[in-house]
Structure formats: structure tokens, C-alpha cells
Length: 330
Ligand code: PBG
Image 1: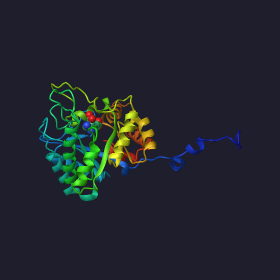
Image 2: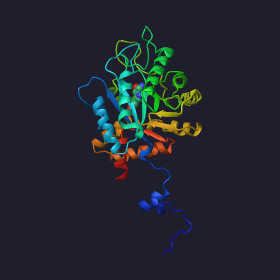
Image 3: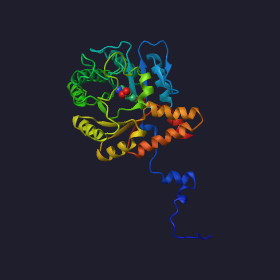
Image 4: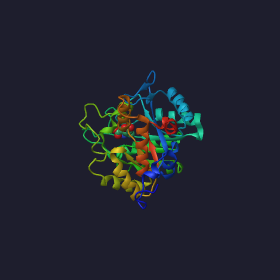
């Protein structure tokens, strides 16, 4: 049978079966590009599931290693660690709890695992702000905070982290951390900057997991004075360009889906490896819809990861990395 319109373009011919669709596909997600976050918490009796985040835990040092072991069997090779110390302070923080978890991971898994570590103070402070406050409690002091961040990044690198990832959003922290690392002979430690991190409501479930919500009798109630305003994407460009200049190896957009436009334009503009963080709230949104039977959870997660890849991310930080092998083969 001749087509009624022989010269007509048929898009559906290339969609008619999985073989053709696979061959014609432009972007695909692979487990290799995924980074799995973990929370390790000092002083809890047993591990606790994070509300809204099925399968995501606040681990003890022991359950952390067992969980990583299990995840490696499921194909995970890259992780992002968040250390949550038991004792909260306002100054003179100790990074030793987190550093010893890094050392334990390194000892157990060697170079089979790529270990990135989040660098911030929000899990370390009594008030949950990402840095040191002024005496009045109305402002995060930039240079005092940057000094503490550089100190803890250095101790994480010395404990064996492959990559340190500052998420605090202070000015000048990338240069300070690079200088501290280089000064200690750690030229090979990678620096991943949360360079385009927005002031977002989508961090909600994370703050319960990391014990890091802004709180307490201080004047400052949120992170608007250091994270990027959602309506001001030019700051994401300026801050990413600056962080490249200061020595960042990898840049990041965070959150992911609500900021895809930013990821698409920044990754075109700045030819560096781009990470995207599918944050706790956007991950939980899919999980909660799936629990209510409103959505196919695994397929929706894969769709979100495909969108990130399309928009220019070469790596994706996601709480679902440990399920990716299963989801991709189903
Ligand atoms: C710490 C930090 C946050 C996240 C990563 N590092 C939260 C925040 O800035 O309040 C968010 C991650 C997530 O929501 O999954 N500064």
C-alpha cells in the first residue's frame, strides 16, 4: 500500500518499537553518572528512616558501611557523604566525626569507591545556619566561616575524600579551600562547588535528615542572605564563573527540576563538568505520589534524570542511585 502522502515526514515510524526508539534516542541515563548521598549521624542508637524518603536513612557509623556495601552490589560507585556530629556549637567546630567516617570508608572500600564529602556548617551549628553568626545573631560572618570551611575541607581530604563539595554559599570559599588543599600537597583532591545553589523550599526533608534546619533564638531565620534568590538566575552565572576562576573543578545546579532552565543555560555557557542535585524535596515528591498510586515512581525518576542529562548535566546526585540498576533494567 502506498502512503497517501509519499513525501510526508513520519515521526511515528521512528517510534514504532523499542528497538527503533533505542537507536534513535539522543540522551540516555547510566548508573555511571549517578552519585548516592548518605547521612551518617553521631550518637544515635540505630538508623532512622528519613520522613518522605523511603529507603533513605540517617545511618550510624556501622549501618553506613553495611549500606554502602549493599549499594555497591547494586552498582553504586560514587557517593556524597554528609556527616552529622552529635555536639552542636557556635564556633571552633570539630570535623573529626565526619573525618573518621571518611577514613573508615576508605579503609573498607579503597579506590573502588569515589567519595565526595559535603562541606558546610549547618549540621554543626546550634542555630542551623551554614556559618558563624555575629554577636547580634543577625548575619553570617563571611571570613570567619570561610576559615572554618577550609579547615574542615582539608581534614576531609586528609582523611581520604576524593572530592570536597562546599554547599555553604559563602563568598571566596573555593579559593580558600583550594589554597588549603594545595598547601597540604593535596593537589589531586577535586573541588565540586555548589555554585548555583538556590534558596529553595525543596530542601525540607534533607534538613530533618541532616539536623540542619535554621532554628533557635537568633535573628536570622532562613538562608536568604547567602543562597541565590530564585528570581535572580544571573547570580548563578556570576557565582559559577567566579568559582571556576577560584579553582572549582565541577560546578552544580541545585535543586534540579525547578531550575532546569538554569542548568541548560549555564552548561552551555560554561564548558566545565556540570552536576545537578535532585534534592530531597523533589525526590520525595515523586516518592509520595508513587505511594499514593498517582505515578509510576521508577519511571518518573528515570524521566527526571533524562531531563537533567538533556539539560547538560554529566553527573546527577540522587537519593535513587542505589535503585538505578534495577529501574534501568525493568
Ligand atoms: C547544606 C545542604 C543542604 C542540602 C545539601 N547541603 C540544605 C540547605 O542548604 O539547607 C540540600 C540537599 C537536599 O535537599 O537533598 N547546606
